Image 1: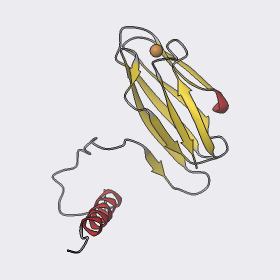
Image 2 (image 1 turned 90 degrees about the vertical axis):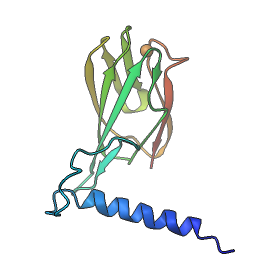
Image 3 (image 1 turned 60 degrees about the vertical axis):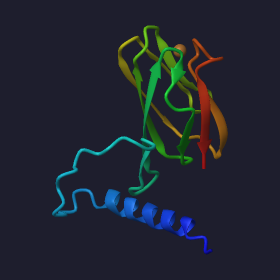
Length: 138
Ligand SMILES: [Cu+2]
């Protein structure tokens, strides 16, 4: 029995990457244009220079929808925080100098430059024991 599972997954990932890269490329398959937000919503745009990373983070009743964020050192990072809870929340990433409050029911954006490679923590400074996660900078 050959181990074909890994290969199939590899091909799938390749196809997905191609599909993502082909957006707006004049493909005749223009039906499914609304991008599905199923997997990680971390979009890394590797343009010229440092690059940009956009992260969508949802805060609800005392938790974040993501417990790990990835970014590249030196990239410009924009974290769009949506507060769907009933309390004020916050996004704090101390090493990057980010400290952004988000009122209940509102959105806010934290922008910062990703620090040196390493593993860090992000928190809601109001509920740090429950609302936290890991930032991996590579
Ligand atoms: Cu909070």
